[in-house]
Image 1 (tube, rainbow, N blue to C red):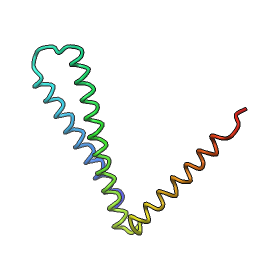
Image 2: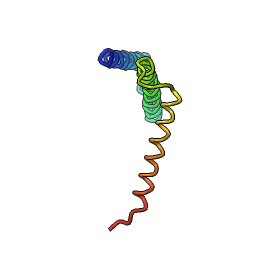
Image 3: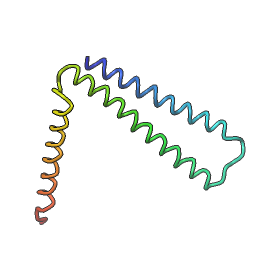
Image 4: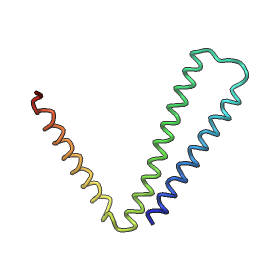
Length: 107
């Protein structure tokens, strides 16, 4: 089950990234032959990077949902509430470690 889920995650990621590259490449080709001004180039680059980042974040959420569904299906998580409780306890422990480190005197 684990290896097939890893393969599915990689396949989804690869296909999605290739699709984004294809869309960006076709957008570049349809932009016209004239050279855009510097401000337009900066806006295009910022927009492209922002859009790509948001799409990748959404893609990772979809992949995480597949993993969560697999864990629930296999019984590795009793329930979503139990998983949330573990996450909160880990966050609390992490924040306590950070607050202890921040008050230690430096030499």
